Amino acid sequence: MADYNRHPEVDAYLEALPDWQRSIAEQLRDLIHEAEPEIVETIKRRTRPYFVLDGNVCALLAAKDHVNLFLYDGAIVPDPDNIITSGHGNKTARMITFHEHDKIPRAPLTTMLRQIAANNRVGGWRKIKGTD
Image (cartoon, rainbow, N blue to C red; front, side, top):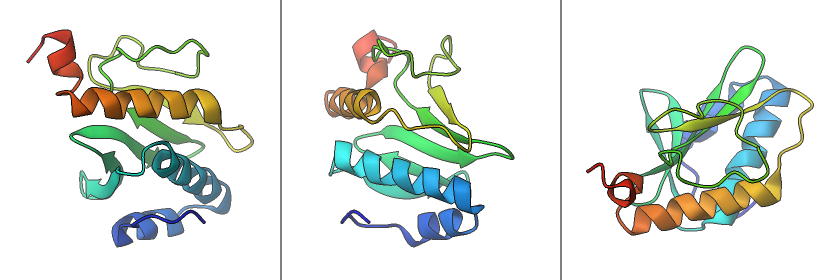
């Protein structure tokens, strides 16, 4: 288990998941914090774990047969490894879906998370795109 400040409600959200979903979500959580140690965990929309740094970076959502990682990047962060599974045309967030035996694409995801955090530090994707 990596060393970072854990939000107790994020802990509770993950603990309630089936084992395989909890495992994926915990791996993603650790990777998010490794990618950008200044990211802070919180809960939004009553129960959803969000990871923020000068704005939303990403969020987790477990569904019936998968785990979604929403990336709040306004579709401006490059995806040369094609890890985004949906939301390509979404103006706010894109998504990576993980099923039970999927491997997490650590290197490309780390690169994307770092770019989203860097974009947030300079005002966020809306400012970068000029849609403020």
